Amino acid sequence: MEQSFSVKNFRSIYDIDLKNRGDLEREYFEDAYRERLRIRATRRLKYRFLYKYRKGL
Image (cartoon, rainbow, N blue to C red; front, side, top):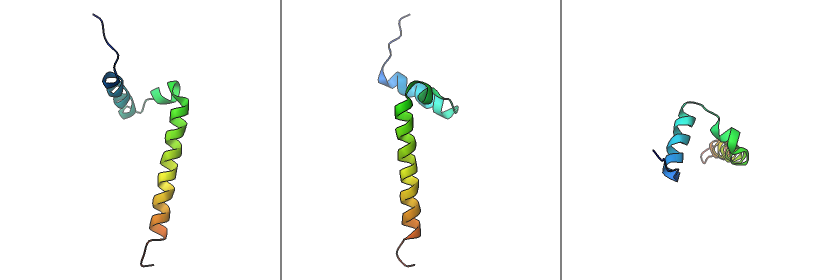
């Protein structure tokens, strides 16, 4: 049986791997993993500043 590899198939494999705390992204897509960590850190910093300097303080 031939199995096609599509974006939809990859996305489901990737989502299952993330749910199971796998390291598919870390192993095969190191640059994308680093960028995702940077984006996550930037978002945390943004929300930290928004909370700290919200109006009404």
